[in-house]
Image 1 (cartoon, one colour):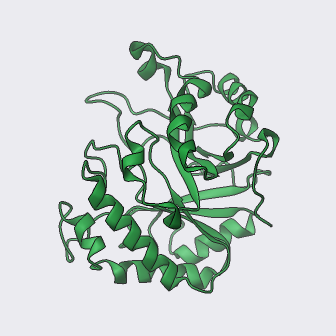
Image 2: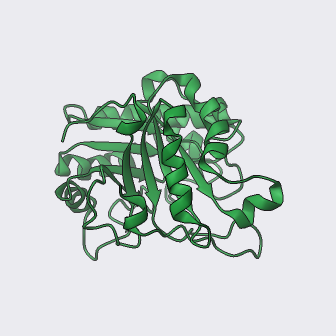
Length: 284
């Protein structure tokens, strides 16, 4: 499968993060995303087949005729350092061996891959070790991590790096520079129970409108790395309306659906949203 640069809305490719394992035989999925629970344990994934290595998981995705996207979650490793010092420790090279272990699995797979490191970094809400108001520290850490990935994976064809904020107004403060970014990513979720009290409609067009204004300034291809609509909302109508306005965002080349319940509640003592979707709705 050759990577196709996208310039027209009809060419926007789709993919899935398939925690629910309901898309395993779905056709027309160009991408499949997996998450490393922590880069310190590269063989622990969501979803995870018992005893399966990262290399085997990547090969399985390729066997479904899809490109894998690996979201590397750089949680701190207590034997190396604390969460508070994670970014400075990464920049100082203390996690280089951790990166090397991930790269060993990627090299064993030896196929095309997109690497998404330290996503949603501007969401300083305590969810991730790497999310911080110190954007300079994040940039240094990201630059060092990608430099090590590139060195360790030198000679491996079709490796691309995705800088993937949530897409909030402050995200560009964390931009590491064009030399470290092949694609720009973002996350986009719609949940009427959350947006209605804020006087938002939660449509794709509304949410992507302000995200795209931030992301497009880099003139890089844009991938929606996480997209979801809550199961209680009219998912089919929302997806159809989204596809109808792709033309307004010419840099978007791919959209990856998050087929899973959310890992956490969105507000204290609130319900946990569920983004699960039928392949019949998401697949054209």
